[in-house]
Length: 116
Length: 115
Image (cartoon, rainbow over all chains, first blue to last red; front, side):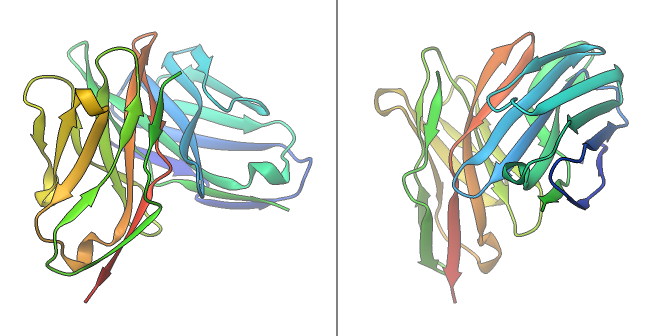
């Protein structure tokens, strides 16, 4: 499972409140990603990180911010949650070993977020 | 921008029958292609991948996929499905950026198995 954990696994919150989701990995992989999964859309990339403090936007980044202050943690923040952000959020990593990046991504178990 | 289309939202097959799930992509360069499977309530598991070389690739659980550049397709096949194959299947294409590989997914195909 590439040592990926996500917390919380489930969260219900109200519109307008801030929410932070955490992705934690134990194997020092450089590249990390946040996706959201919605019916009919598959998974869509929100943000990704290519190193500590190095992040960039994905396809659906509006309303989200990220931070990566250390290799093992990649945080996704909804500054002011809206009902359209109700979704399942997946963190992923690209495996790296010996400086080489392997091309497949491995996914965490997901966080189900409901915004009322 | 690259895109992936999975034309079939839902497919039902009988146990023991053959399976083909369709995937079409739009990408300017040589694509990096993937198939993932997601069982209900679970995360995604990589079935197989194509980067270069032999256009017929083998994956886990008896799945294979064939890359056809002329048709921009990467269809997933299995000769005989089992009830445990019931799941949602996602095709994806990868795009490199800053050394990272951003995945663009299709909408998914939900597979139901009849006993």
